[in-house]
Image 1 (tube, rainbow, N blue to C red):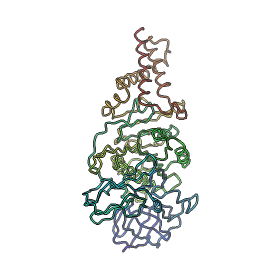
Image 2 (image 1 turned 90 degrees about the vertical axis):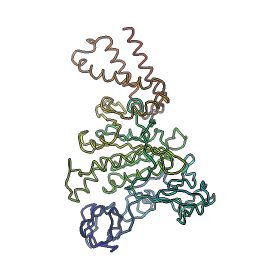
Image 3 (image 1 turned 60 degrees about the vertical axis):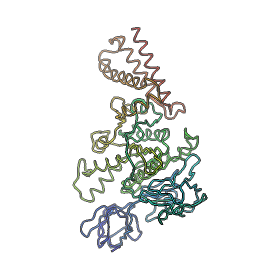
Image 4 (image 1 turned 45 degrees about the vertical axis):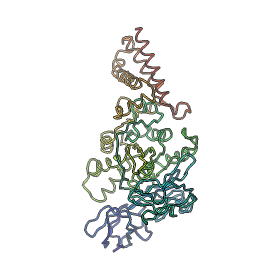
Length: 532
């Protein structure tokens, strides 16, 4: 049967019965209002459905319809500069249909079906193609070219390719062995898009934030985490990352965070000039907003929606940075659904599969050889913010995240209270990409860059060791060399690590300038030390 009946409703979880041809992760329409849900468990005759909209007023006996499709995102021209909810419905269209608060059962297409795009063919009739090959290009924004690719599952001979001209995303632009190809394609969010080869990252992603680029760099195609207590600046760090990193495309996922933070982002990005192009930053950004007042279950889908869109741009050969704020809210959604499913709880009530789900998400990052014969390379960098309750880094979400990410930027509330931003604790943070990107930093920063980093870090570590002595007996009891070291450490902290996000000159620092700044500090220290 393609239609069943609701047996039980418990929050975002609906149990249906009398459905025979159902499949795991199939999208269903629940209740009289046809709200969107996804099958997450099948037990005998009972089908458990995770619902992505408010279930208030939905009751037993109402219909449940199968769609035969898995939860997928629509990919094609029109993604850039758009803002979606957790299941890729454009918020602008939702507002027009239901007002300030999202109504239920509303269908909105992810991409504008009536808009025409100027298509330039790159393929030829009679050419043998396979998944990932480029059929043509669309100039989506002034400085962004959208490459129209053969879907990963299709290969064969090009029977027909459209001439250069204006087409909608639903018009046929090519035929491959009789299969019609349009500019829009779909891909299931829980299935990683295929690649040719995964490689070891060897290029740093420059963020313009001195404490990150100099001391704890992240590679293009790397994974990072930003754990920290409330008010320590996780969101600001990610906003700075989005504004200034040298990625081609930014995907920002607001997962369960406050609505005003996403509002700030929406207000700022169209006004900030991208340093690479001089155009508004929004013209290389896609926002996925699933704020704290939106349905809990949709948080679980939002991170997969965002990363599938990111993989699509990666397949074009771009460097993509995905920022998830915060994965703790995503884990809380997993915990709530798991509790309603009556699964055996793990640490602090989180499901036993929290670790594997976390790993599967971050493993979709990387530096790849993309599908296609033109030997494209793409990067997908993933940085997740974690909000541990009370700043307790031993809690399960933080620990599972640290197991799979290779960069740890530890935010410190004590530094935030001192108005030291970014409040990244230089003694607790680390980066495991140092050896992989060592040559890149020397080439782009300056000769001896890595040695200067090591010397500066040793000074900061020695300062921490001397702090206890200073508290007990005072600075004057220290040797002249140790007193000099404390002054140098203060210079590193206040002149180099401290950075003002609201100052035009200080908000972004190039890698070359970072090198010159730290070199000046270390050279002065060594020159004075010779005379002591």
